[in-house]
Length: 127
Image (cartoon, rainbow, N blue to C red; front, top):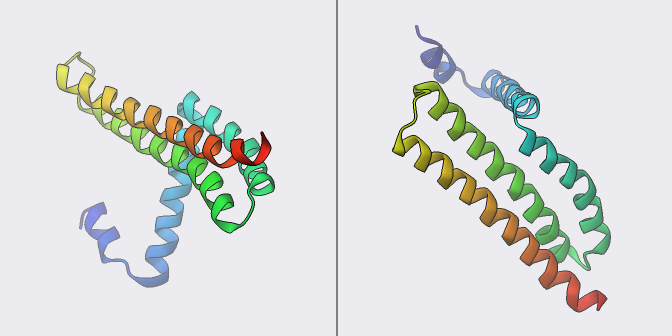
């Protein structure tokens, strides 16, 4: 039985525990190997408490915090794409470049989205 079949055969609490372990490993790997992820985590450490403090009401707080968490999510996905591309081939290839550039663009758009959310919520309240 392959590792994939073995994981797919797990159910219930065992599958949940395994999934949590894989998620922990993924976060640890991103922290260890991805400088951008570390920088964005430091941003989140500052911005999430700030968003909870500055947001007026649950919706504003959710938007402020959620926009920051979305940056981390997209960065993790971008890092996963980059790792797969690097695993497949170390040679320069136009499709590899395209995949990495598109992942990078997704991170940029998410950063711009977060900036827009923060500005749209906070500027009317504090100016």
